[in-house]
Length: 208
Image (cartoon, rainbow, N blue to C red; front, side, top):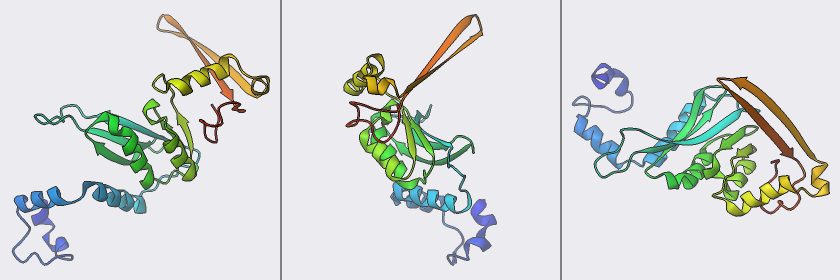
């Protein structure tokens, strides 16, 4: 219906002497094109007319599995998206069949994005030196979650805060908030270290 209603518009690009292609022809076309290249070109096209200001803003990179997207023996579709939080816009997304491929997909997604001046947040899956270097090289800052899956680094960071060196202790700050509600008391503590003594080989250009 769309093709028939837009035939005059489409004939600006191809003759379509016999009318628009059948749905079988369209299906065959979409099966043979490179989906990665198509996504990259689509993101670049979107950016020409929709480019939100991300300087000083948060760009959240996260992976989500689409419910109901499994097909027989095929596993569900997993999407990794970059979301400009303040603008409320997805800047780009890449499909992967497996969650453990997120590290590779995040690196691919970062190639397409302009994150200059932005704060890029990623969960513990993206806590990789290569990803941190990529963000810094593109002019952004990063906020990466760290969990026990990075056992060595996790231990070093815990030790850095629990038993800080005197020079590091002087460069640490701390704040705490207490909230009451819904029958419970929530205590949130935040400690920031600027002098990363002993962590220079694993933490790149930033604070923890």
